[in-house]
Every structure is written in structure tokens, then in C-alpha cells.
Amino acid sequence: MHAEIISIGDELTSGQRLDTNSQWLSEQLGMLGIRVLFHTTVADDLEANRQAFLLASQRADVVVATGGLGPTADDLTRQALSETTGRPLELDQPSLDHIRNLFRRRQRPMPESNVIQAMFPAGSTPIPNPHGSAPGIELAMDRPERGPAWVFALPGVPAEMKEMWQATVRPRLERLLGPEAQRIRHYRLKCFGVGESDLEQMLPDLIRRGREPQVGITVSHATITLRITASGATDEACRLAMQPTIDTIHQCLGDLVFGEEDEELQHAVVRLLRGSGRTLATAEIVSSGLLSQWLSDAAGAGDTYRGGLVLHDGQALLAAVHEASDAVARHGLDSRELAALLAQQCRHLFQADYGLALGRLPLSDPPREQDKIPLAVAWAGGVATDWAPYGGHPHIRRTRCTKHALDFLRQHLLRR
Image 1 (cartoon, one colour):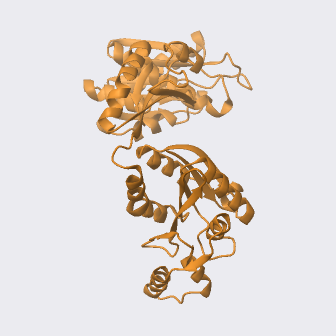
Image 2: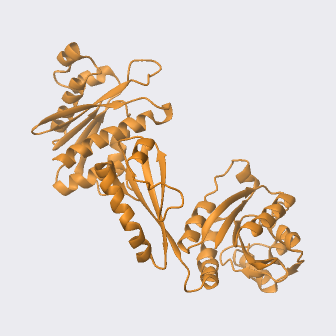
Image 3: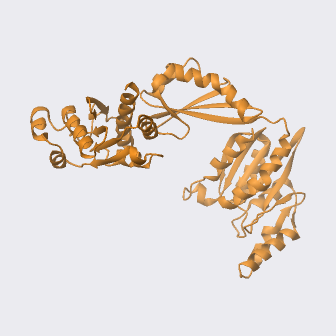
């Protein structure tokens, strides 16, 4: 069984509001084992709505629409369904009573225009909306030579839509699917340290389309996510189907895999520090506090992260680091030697087991692809240094080099 989600409203097609309903509904449908093949966004236009429902009913078995159920002239969902199916709108008295009672409880007179919200295409079923004035609509759209397409129209208000989904639509779909329905589950592995194409070459035919379980690959701000998708009768069956693929990915990629699901590099670093009972302090220039923010926000950071220095120019750097003048004279402000001194200084200042330093911006304007940022990790037994690349799109440069610093520390902690 396949599905299509239709999001309705000028505020969506004009870009004034982000459509989060479709994302949430896609996850919910997937959990039922219903694969979503299409997302459609349509403006408040009657003919466009009618065409959207007609097309969706032809190519999907389940159609879930949000929006367009209000009382105003631009709310056209019920009329579009009426015209698409050729079923006239009829008044549902219990729905009208609910709407009147809702206004009465709120001590407001009900405008006559709200009566339209109790009108439904003939043969359809109202979906109760306990806390709103817009009931939903369940409708079976006939299709020649095959079963009907099931249409569920819900209000666009996320809180109302989610409540109605959980109370009415999800149980209804579970009954339609029957006890033998297959579930769809996803599992994400997070990777860092190589490019997307390089990582794909390290995996033996896992990204091939049509493979079961399916493995998808996406990249965001230099973090690569591998999404494994499997279907099965139960959550446990899905996980069992995924496990050989998960094991293969770990074997092929090793320490390039740093986490799972919603974890980021800072969570991996905090986990390693807590596991060894160690603490961390930071000093950063190029990232403008991003490193400190991520570590502070990481779940369970607690006493693991002691604090950090955020510096913005060469004078602040010289004031923060003992013996900095000599290091600058010998190696320059953009040197790994100065980053090493900075890592050692912040470690001592915050009395931490480790100090992590990320150096300053390149002097070239604009930055060049070959520009690099010095970084260093200091501990009681010594110091290690490296370079973080600063090339790529300007939008991700700070994020990318900050992640390189975290990964440099992560790799050091793994080796130790």
C-alpha cells in the first residue's frame, strides 16, 4: 500500500510557512508499513485542489491531506472533494452541535460561516476534532477495476492534526491493513572523515537501488548519514533484517562511524570522555563559540565539559597564551605550535584532563580552497596537532572545521 500527502494553503506555496505536517505524517505512515511516494503542496485554488485529489487517488492507495477545512472563503478542501467525487455536501448535525458547543464553552458567538465546517461530501465520515472547530473527512474514492483510494482530510493546525491522527486515522488504517501488515523501520548511522563518494566506494554494493534492506546516503555539513530501511511483521523482525547490513557497514568503515540516529560528533566525544572519567576544556577562534556551544548542549555533558575560551583576534590570543609572543615570532599566528600552546593553556586554566584548541581564520580574503586551520589536543602526557580544512562553501566552513576538531579529539580518545 502506497500513500500521498497533500498540503494545502497559499502560506505554504508562497514560502511564508514551512510544511512540517508532511514530515510528521510520512514518519507515521512509514511506521504502519505504508510507503509514502509523493508529497504535493497546493495553493488555495479550487481547480488546483480538485486536480491534486484526482491525481493522488489514481496513484496512491492512501491520501492524507492537511489544511483547507476552515470556515473562510479560501478553505476549499471539502468543496474540492465534493466536486472530485460528484457527491454533494450534506450537513452533519452532530458535527454542527460540536462546533456550537465549542463556541459556547469559549463564551463566543458562533459566526454563521462556521456552519460550512459541518458540511461533508455524501457518504463520507466525519473525523472528530475534540479541540477545534474543523472536523476531518474520511472518504473512499472509487477507482475502476481496483479497490478504493482512502482519503483522510485533516486540519492544518499541527496539534489538532496529530491528535486526530492518533485517535482516529491511525486506528482506521490499522484496521484497513489487517493483522498481516508489514511495518517499515529506519535506522541511521552517522559518519565523518571522508567525502560522500569515497565512503560509497568503501561499501560493497550496499547503496544499490532495489537492494533489501535499502541503504540511502545523505550529507549535511560534512556529516554523512547512512539510512538503513527494512520491512517486517514486527519491529524486531525489521531490526533482524537490518543487522547484517549494519554489521557490514561497521566492518567496512570502522571508526568513520561515530554514532547513530540523532547523535552528532559532540555526543560521541562526551560519551568517550564520560566512559573514561575524563574532562575537557576548549579554546577556539575560527568557530566563534560553536565548539563550546555544541559541547555544552550535548546530552549528559555535565561535569565532563569544564568550559572554554572564545577568542576573536590576534591580540586576544596573545593575551590568553603564555609564551605566545615567542611562538608567534618563530612560527606565526596561524601555526600548529601556537594551537598547541593554546590547548595546553586552556587545559591548565580549567583544570581539565584534555584541552582542545581550534585556531584562527586564514588571512587570505576571500579564503582559498587550500586554507587550513590549526588544531591541537593537549593532555598530561603531551600534545598532538593537525590541520582542519577551511575550504568548501562559505555556509558550512565554520561548521565543518569545528567538526574536524571534534573528530580529531574523538580519534585521539579512541586510540588512548
